[in-house]
Structure formats: C-alpha cells, structure tokens
Amino acid sequence: MTLKVALLGCGNVGSQVARILLDEQAELAARIGATLELTGIAVRNVDAPREGDLPRELFTTDAEGLIDGADVVIELMGGLEPAGTLIKRSLNRGASVVTGNKALLAAQLPDLTAAAHTGGAQLLYEAAVAGAIPILRPIRESLAGDHITKVLGIVNGTTNFILDAMDTHGSQFEDVLAEAQRLGYAEADPTADVAGHDAAAKAALLASLAFHTTFDLENVYCEGITEISADDVAAAADAGMVVKLLAIAEKTTDSSGAEGINVRVHPTLLSRQHPLAAVRGAFNAVFVEAENAGELMFYGQGAGGAPTASAVMGDVVSIARDVAAGGGAAKEAQPRPTRALDIAESTTRYSISLEVADQTGVLAEIAGIFSRHGVSIETMRQTVGSEAHDGAARLRIITHAGRESALTATVTEIEQLPVVKTVSSVVRVEGK
Ligand SMILES: NC(=O)c1ccc[n+]([C@@H]2O[C@H](COP(=O)([O-])OP(=O)(O)OC[C@H]3O[C@@H](n4cnc5c(N)ncnc54)[C@H](O)[C@@H]3O)[C@@H](O)[C@H]2O)c1
Ligand SMILES: N[C@@H](CCO)C(=O)O
Ligand code: NA
Image 1 (spheres, rainbow, N blue to C red):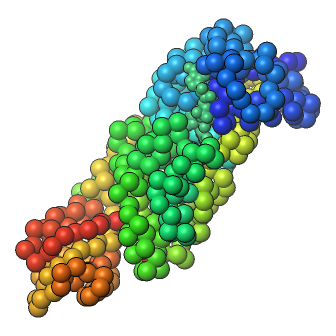
Image 2 (image 1 turned 120 degrees about the vertical axis):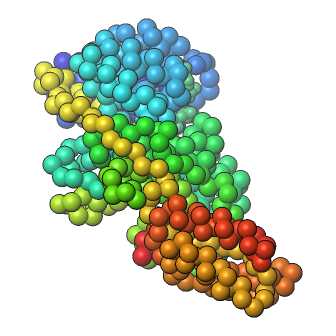
Image 3 (image 1 turned 90 degrees about the vertical axis):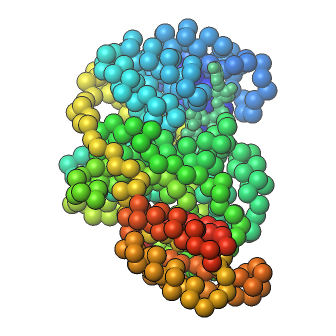
C-alpha cells in the first residue's frame, strides 16, 4: 500500500520534513506497513534558492491541485490563509492533516475539528505546542483517564532564548532576537513571539485539550517580554531569581467560589531552584498537575526545524498506521463548554520595584496600603544611594499570594502616593 503525502511549505520545518520523508522512506515503510510517497511540495516560488538537495520536480505553486490527490496533507506554510482553506478542503474530502500552525488552530479549532468530522479524517498537531516535546498526545491519550488541574510551562523557544541570553551574558534584546531568527526559532513575524501571541495560542490549545473544552484565544490574558528590561533581569538575578515567559492554564474558583478556567501568559519571576529556571536557550518545558498522576514534567527542544519535524513525523506515522490498518481511529468526545475566568480572578504573587522619597514614615504608609487590600508582604528590600536617583530610595517588594484584582488595586493606590516617585516594574512571581 502507498499513501500519497502532500507537503505545503518548505521553510525551516517543511524542508526538514521533506528530508526525513525522502531519506527515511524504507525505514518508515517498515514501521508503518505502507509506503509514504511525497507527491509534491507547495511553495511560493519554485525557483527560489534553497538549502539541501530536494528534487526540484517536487516543487509546485499549485497547492490546491497537490492536496486534491493526497491521502495525508502536511501544512507547514504558517499563517491563517491560505493555510486554513487548504486544511479544511483536505479534511472535508477525507485526507488527514498534520500541522504545526498554532496561530490557525487556536483561532479556528472548532471549524477545523468539524471539517475533520465531516470528512472522517484526522487532524493532528503535536508540533504546534512545544515543538519536539510529546505533550499533546500524553494529555489527549495517556492522561485521558485522569483530571488535569493545572498546566504551566515555557512554550516559546524564541523568548526563552532571549531571556536566557540577557540573564547569562547580559545580551541586548535585539541582538538575541536576530540570532533566534537566524536559527529558525522565531515566527515569520517575530512580534508573535516577543508579544506573547505565540505562547497564548499554545496556551489556548493546551487548555482546550487538558480541560476537554474549546478555550477561546480571546480569553487568554497575554503579556509579552517587550517591557522586560536589562534592569529587571539583573534585579531578578540579584534576588536569586530568573525571568521566564510562562503559559499557565488552571482550573480555579473566582471570589464567589464558582469554578472556571484561567489561562494566562506573562513574564514571571522564578526562584533559581525552580525546575523551570533551569530551562535554557530555545528549550521548552511543560508541567502538568493531575489529580491522580500528581506532577509531571515534559522537557525538550521547543523550536527549530529538525526538532519540530520530529513531532510532525510522529503524527504522520500515527495517521499512516491507522489508514494502513483500515482507518477508524478512536474519536474524542465533543468538547464541553466551560467558564473562562478573567486574570483579575487568578491568584498570583507580585514583585514590585518602586522609587520613593527617602523620608520617615514612607514604608509605613506603603505597608498600610498593602494591608488595606488584604495583600501580605513576603519581603521588602530598600536600597539608598548609588542605585537610586536624587536622594530617593529604591524598594523591591515581593508579596505573598493574593487575588490579582487586590494586587493591581494595591499598585494603583501606591502609584498615587505623593512620596512615590515611580513604580518602575511589576512582575508576577510563581512558586514558593
Ligand atoms: N520554526 C519552528 O521552530 C516551529 C516550531 C513549531 C511550529 N512551527 C510552525 O510551523 C509552521 C512553519 O514554520 P517555519 O518556521 O517552517 O516557517 P517558515 O517561514 O520558515 O516556512 C514557511 C514556508 O511556507 C511558505 N509559504 C508561505 N505561504 C505560502 C503559500 N501561500 N504557498 C506556498 N508556500 C507558502 C514560505 O515561503 C516559507 O518557505 C508555522 O505555522 C510555525 O508556526 C514552527
Ligand atoms: N516561534 C516558536 C516556534 C515553536 O513553536 C517558538 O519560538 O517557540
Ligand atoms: Na509538541
């Protein structure tokens, strides 16, 4: 049996998938029990210079013609269109699809899933979240009999690469971003990485699978790393901490006790002892907490052509084995509706840096505001002198856990105090 495989896109990931399909054809056939024939690669320009030695006759600009003869379609063009239309067309006519396009999946998961049901086809996307790390299949299959309560992780390689270089070498944001682009980690428009949108899309997908629902991307709170300064990174290091961009999805309760799901992406301070603090470069790691399994951690390469191609090929082999065995892969139950909780209802800790007048009574005034909002201070560190300006004192306050709404109200009130010159940064803190 031979399965026709159409590949859409030949960039960082697509070119690596093509290489594996061609170089490993015999080994893959032995594992699957059917041969995978790469019938063509849809590109924008057939004559564009490319690395590697992929046969030129495989390239075509006719993506629609290519998918119409395929059993399996691999979409690695990225972007919402024409990727969305091509994927739906493939699924509707019964061809299974593998994609790494988290932006599209997070925006259109219900429509894409409906197309897969209509065509009796599969839609798999392990590459879309945390690159090479097997995380969606374990959530979807291995933990299907458990209750996941929280997912927390570093899911964007580019921003982790940037924050790590700022922490380790004191590098400049722009220089490291250019390096991440050169290494094939960044999105075509790297704003998606640094503004947190890529991590937010992944967080929505993780929440949807972990909580058996469809979590709307619009309900993901999203803050990127563009406001994180070299000062923030150095101050974190001073305090024995590190800044990481975290995606957090958790089942929780609001102030009235009603249950819901909160999903958020933001820069976060972690103690250097925290396991996620040791995740360096473009690596990713995802913590999963489940009622019966307890804590699980998944770690590996979160970006890059070859690592991501590994996840794509895992999905392709899984689909091909199913087709070779006559089809009928198990269907998941319909997602159930859920209540999205606003970030204001989440429980977190704040690290607040501020400059205040160096005079008697200031600390008591500030402590009074915390106390009125029911927010408890864990540590308060004051520096007077070279680090602070104009005879001002610099304060760094780390709170105990509190409701985000109480923490923001505290900061707003502190900003209005005449003795406070400026609140220079507010970063959330995770872990003990
Ligand atoms: N690079 C990674 O580390 C990584 C990891 C996980 C997921 N992804 C996802 O995989 C997808 C591809 O990523 P990439 O890094 O390979 O991107 P890329 O920009 O390197 O490659 C995309 C390729 O698709 C081609 N393309 C775009 N529109 C096209 C069209 N209309 N017709 C034909 N060709 C078209 C582009 O010319 C380009 O060569 C994206 O959805 C991305 O989010 C990437
Ligand atoms: N741009 C993404 C690619 C992997 O999804 C990242 O940096 O993590
Ligand atoms: Na993955």
